[in-house]
Length: 557
Image 1 (cartoon, helix red, strand yellow):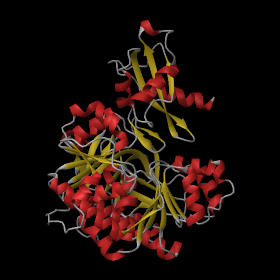
Image 2: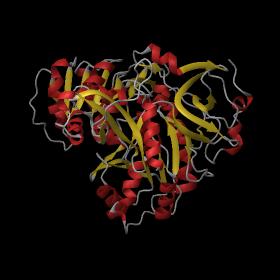
Image 3: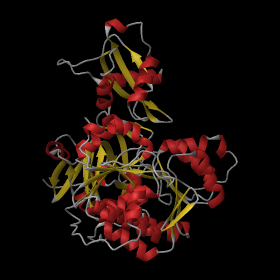
């Protein structure tokens, strides 16, 4: 299959914002080499400030090498999967780069997960080692006998010795570091950047349970260099200063992992790192340290702007703010510009693309509703259901080709086959998002193709929630959809048909409270409606689309 001339010629080349070129050179190196370069290039420069504790690039290099040697002593080998279940902290960075430095594979678990979700990811990814926050031990304990783990490393983010005693399986981070008091050189390990997996990043795509996107060292290094091109221009021509950022994106998510954590050694930025999104702390950092960049999702910026704590605070140091993981509402962009004096940037990406695909930096010509142009070395197009490329201006599924596109899904050949197709000598990724390209190459996202819910920037998968709801004895039938919400992007609503014995004996709120206990904080339904029936197809499949349409009509009335 061929591709249209307008894509071959990359017709957007004449409309790209300053700082973005059609192509860049991407070195074929591993993330270990990239991290080592950071220590070499930036040494005593401060890399991270974590609640008043400063870490230079040399500090992080030293701690990472000590921990990496400790992992080798525990038996971690090249190709082993190691799960990280930690909030943002120096410990996350140390674990992440230590694992990658010895040729092992990272899978990062959301700190919001409860036991069942953590266990699913550990088992599905094939992880044999788990590095976890000591406070999550109660969740771990519920499923410990079902997990095929060789070792569990407990971390206390305050640096204290975890209260849970060590056993044959459990070892403390402190013990590993005591056993490795000096940063010895790591043994050489052959990493093939284009073939070897660095990260198994979990994503649900548009259907079913979360799947692990296999991202190679080269995928992530490519995306980091693509982003670096924008960062370099920003530092030299826009900020005219070193990059000082507030790091609030969760690092278990690929957006935070690539754009903050992994990018840092390449650009030498200083980051004020917070374990959780905390408006009070963010305000304190803005007042005291005058950071000039911040990446986030829509709800973070809405909460920050609407907090009473922000009322009389000068935000003008934040010259560069970028929204990802969901569309940027026009109203939010206006409010941000009014508060800071600077336009907001926006990007589009997905886990399967490491994640960044497009960018519209603050200095670019703006088109409301557009997520900008493709970043360097990236092709985009729009196709119909027959995978035929559509003319400029027509709506279809957005497809992407580039060095940042994943190898495939972990242990899911059928799913991998469904999302890829070959055309014009390129491997194209189907994003599942409906979009159109305008005459200047701006990309406008229209809607998601299927049922994925975006709640505060998090991907929420209806089937996963439904399967847990079905465990409640009162639930006969149920389905879950996203309903439009100006603050959250979408809210999560469950429609439930009750078992006859429970009618009149249980409330919607009781179901919500039960769900809250049994799934991550961003997944449980905020709205529950008891119904007598659900719309179904001729074969009995529940039609979520009909329910979404009914909700949309309610919104207009």
